[in-house]
Image 1 (cartoon, one colour):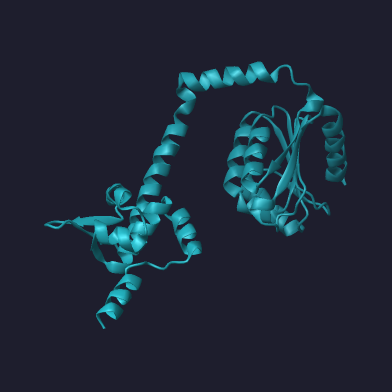
Image 2 (cartoon, helix red, strand yellow):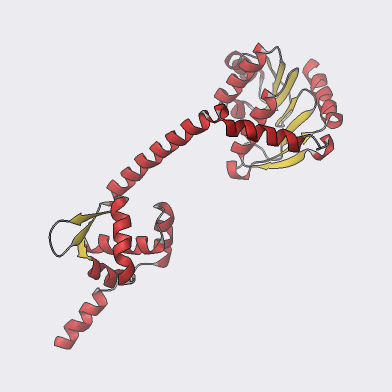
Length: 274
C-alpha cells in the first residue's frame, strides 16, 4: 500500500503536456522552452516552490530559479511572501491583457521613432548610400518582384509619389475602397504638384462616379480587369494576382523601363478616350 502511494505520487509529480501545445504557446507568448514548461507547470499547480516546479516541469533545478525570476519580471508569475519561497501563476487572461498593452506601447514608441527618423543624421547617411549605389544601375536592370499586398501598396505609394507629370492607374472598386486613405492622400499631394492623374476600374459607371467624388480625381469605367500603376511613363508596378487572393500570396512586379511603360501608358490613353 505504501509502495502504491509512492508510485502514484511519482506519476502525478510529472506534468504531461503535448509538445505541440508547448511549441504553440512558446510562440504566442514569446517565451523560451524552459519558461513555457515552468509557466505551464505552475498553472497546473497554482502555487508551488521552485523545487516542486522543477520536478513537475522536468526543467533542471539549477535553471528553474532563473526562469522563475524572468517570468516574474514579465508578469507571468508572482512570488509569495514568506518562507519557504513559493510562486503563484498569474491567470492567462491577465497575462494576455498585459502583453497586449506592452505590445501597443512598444508599437507606438517604434512608430514615434520612425516618424522622426528623417530628421536624423543617420537617415541622411542612408539616403547618400542609396544614391551612391543607385547611380550605376541601368534602367533595364531595375526590375524586381514584390511579394505580399502590404509591400505592394508601399511600393505603389512610393512610385506614385515620385511622379512629376502623369499617373495612369488601373484597379478595382474593391481595392481603391479598401485603401481609400492611402490613395486619397497620395492623389491630393500629386494634384498640388500639378500631376495629371487618370484612374480606370473594371467595375460599372456607378462605382466609377462614386470613387471620383471620394478620391477627388477622374475615374472611368472600362472593361479592363488589371491592376497596375504607371508613373511618368517610366516606372510600372503591375500585379500577377487578383484582389481576391490572400494578401500574403499577392504578387507583383516593379519595372523601371521607359520603353515598355510608355507603350502601356499609350494603350491606357487609347482606352481612356474610347
